[in-house]
Length: 164
Image (cartoon, rainbow, N blue to C red):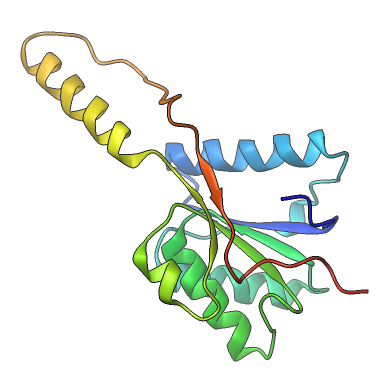
């Protein structure tokens, strides 16, 4: 997207969940690739639900100062995070840009509509179902990476360039 943000926080999933660790690693890699510091105080371990996102946003706001952007590890947590920002008088995207991982109809109808990274869940479900069937037939389980289609950024109303 290239909006020019340099102070980007992460509200992540639960600490024990594999997807949470991979999303945190992706955030850290993207920050390093952009030459930006990944400040530990800007990484909040929360969860996947709206309540966890709201709690994560509150922790981020309590630590201060406000980053210019935040990545939220799930769209459900993003709904809670955006609601908590609004309750604290923080306007998305005017004061804080937000992007969430995954897409749903709720992200589209929420105000502001949430910019998301749409993941290939249909393909992941098909691979998981085939793995289960193979396993029931005696096959070994393995880690699989869905490479096609690639995740896609869907730009909506929750992102804008940083304000000076």
